[in-house]
Length: 193
Image (cartoon, rainbow, N blue to C red; front, top):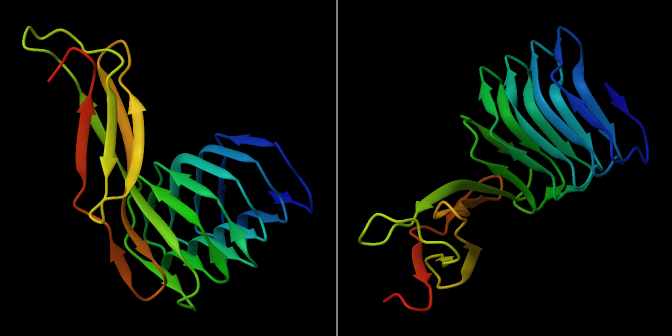
């Protein structure tokens, strides 16, 4: 799959691509969504994003290739959610890429050629709010603070009393992991103490 310059708002879903140079190559392509694709045995990368921004890769498997994801040429604000990486030489390989996010994904290796590159590694925290009578608490403000005291994520609980937060585990700059855990989670709602 080749997304040429200025390709935007494309949705690519449920594909199996293998034994090619790359399953997806996107150059200067933005705001595209890739959902539940399975890519494997590709010689360069399963996903190669070059100067590509604000793309979402959701679900699927990226396996048995040189790179699960290759981010280059100032690719930024791309999100990889619920991905299984396995048996790649490098699961994530980023060169001249900043402010990208890996969320709730299973991976083994991250490589970068510069400390100026960075990748946020995040996980979900799921909160189930119930009162003393086991009744769902709706509309409670659930806020997570990282170890420096900075507010990181905030959401209201839904009608089932559920709230799902995205929490940064660490920032990876290619050679070092900067942990922001543990987190403190505060829950507030008028009428409750």
